[in-house]
Length: 507
Image (cartoon, rainbow, N blue to C red):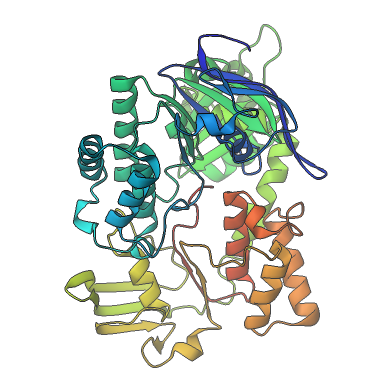
């Protein structure tokens, strides 16, 4: 089957769910000791590919093998060779068991010899920084800590092949860096072969090779360097003072494929140029015709990134790019709707939350104005989730005071409920209901009914581009689509204040 030197071989893979084709004619190989990254938008088919290789799903057609073993004909034979980490925050864990008990359970499941078990356990606990939390139940861990524990359980038996489905979703930047150090150390020491999917394009650049998927098909493949080289001379950077008139001109340029603005800096992806022309020259000529000089623009060539490659393949024309921007424009236009002016949205004085001797939140003071986007930044276990739950009235405040939209959180929980929206880190959706049914349920809880409810559901389904997924069971949706549904549920009743706990994890 294919390349005899490859550890993982996939040829002509197809997977269908009734009338939906999730994977269509996908082929790739992964050599021993290599890391291959599957990247693509939600619903691209990445999870289905990994589940077919791991034996979780059967394929409708095609061939798959790991270390020469047919994954479809002999799925039991590959289980000892692989470590499989499913998508989600620690979905392979047992919530009622402690960190240590989960690790012991997987040790017994894999029948790992004592000496090997102790050696691997100690090293993995040190790498993931979970040793201080051995007695904590898995259900009490933060999302990132659950992912770390899931990784320990996946690596415990020293598999030759790792199948990791978005393993760093919900993990803070420091832990993500630690994760990649662990993976690269294992690959370097034991020549482990790794297939992983990721929503983070900066992570994909750490892979030896990449397979980019869309709508179940492979649309690009190669090393990160090879893929970026396809866009040589097509990525430009512009810095301009008083950028609005300049931006208006740039958006009207026929050679524009996408535009990303951060402050006064703009990153421009140009459409493929005509033969014998350079995009930078065509852009300069166009802007000159609009009375904007190259010197005023501070035009510079930019190094193409995988994000540029992704955008280039996903926006085949300027019209496609404009269509994708529409929901964002709608969201921006409603940004300050129903928010009272000059009213402090959140004020806290010395609020703390203790679990026994453990201080999850310790004497925090906050002042957040209406209309402000306020970010909580910190590693897993820093107390971000606990603080948000305290402000929503979902977690007891040990000491201190908190006022949200003028209401005392301790005494005014009922009055606050209809004025705030909350999207939790762990999904609060009903997995057996469809996306539309979840939205209808949440809308009813917030007092919406009949035409008002149906109108809001239709508006949000369109705004979040959920038309194709609204009738599907939430449990079957890709992680990113579930995030969209959860956010839509939080916005149904048009809250004045929105609490979002890591809303873009896995998106």
